[in-house]
Length: 184
Image (cartoon, one colour):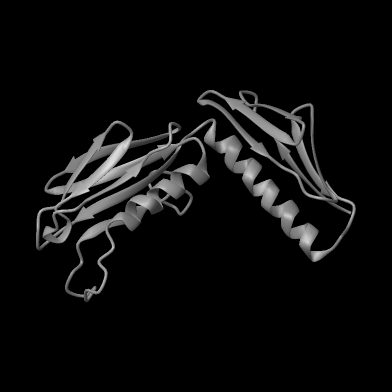
């Protein structure tokens, strides 16, 4: 039998109903479905218990993954996940705008085309300027959404059929939460 327990802080509430775990905290609430055969999740008092009656490799992996996801949900309702991306251009001045929940990139490598990504409601994107450098920050209480949209923004500006040593223009992820950064 495998069993992992997660203790909840005083300001965090959890409930599990119809295979949906709901975590509430000072920044809001996050819901996620947890359903897999032979894996059980339950909330007792201020503890989330993830367990399995089988002691096999697959069940151990899923119990560990569910525990990590629940921990990320708990952290997210207390402190948002922040990813920082840097705008880099040397050949042509790239223009980035945030309008109507969209990130719009124009003049990438001097091209006339416009590249854009629609942003989900629970993700907040901001432009920052520090000295001569420009940055984007992607912030959300949901770690998966923040990471997904940081990656989508990074993929907007990929130079195809160009030598990456010469054409280094783009938007690059420089900080992410949980890796010993200042934002964590």
